[in-house]
Length: 315
Ligand SMILES: [Mg+2]
Image (cartoon, rainbow, N blue to C red; front, side, top):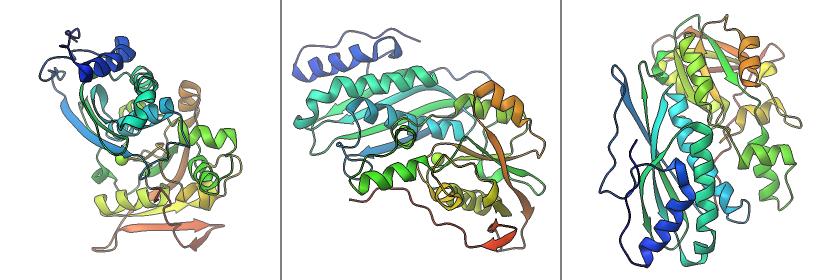
């Protein structure tokens, strides 16, 4: 980790200086042409990028600038969790229209909060004028044994972290112009990247993982397709936030909880006491005939249609 180096004069650099000042101790090595990173011996570099655009992914009236910054960085870091990777750093490209300049420091505070919470220093970035607020977050991490979507095997169980449904209930309320319940709003405005949880699961034999961005049912379909397996999802077991039905919970996108395949005998009580979060078995994995990979949903012991995802906000 290297210290930031001083930036030159000019109004663009004044704004950048103000932003980097808000990153504070969570920034490292900013000010050179590029950042350098050391990947621990025996580990692979894991990279992902995520863009959040005003009026495509969020409305500025729904979230404070601090929440917009936090949520954008957390959504990107969640993809490192899904790979079982530990964060090495983040690079933030910010498009900031003049009408959003006043919120720039609070936005940077939100990014720094995510950096602190999930152990991901900000190692570089770019700043541009533009028509709408857009935050592109590139995350870099490392893993000795990354978790891929392709790894699910016959006999694995499916496990999900946390409780689902809050994000879709908050989004529904916001789209209807009403105030979401505080607990639902928190799930939407302040999701968590399950970095440490993913390490725990990887160490205990998880074979495949995905973070729930499209909805549990849709993301289970991604694992099924990638692994070439037939997955069974028991909707009666899906952990729901207060007020959510199983169908809400299975369809809710942008949850950033983890869906993993792995041993059927994971110690959910040990997970819960370590992280203060439920770990729930929601189904299982079986081999599929060629061309027949997919997900079967059960409710009340009977086959039901797989709930469709409900995720990205469309203006
Ligand atoms: Mg993902």
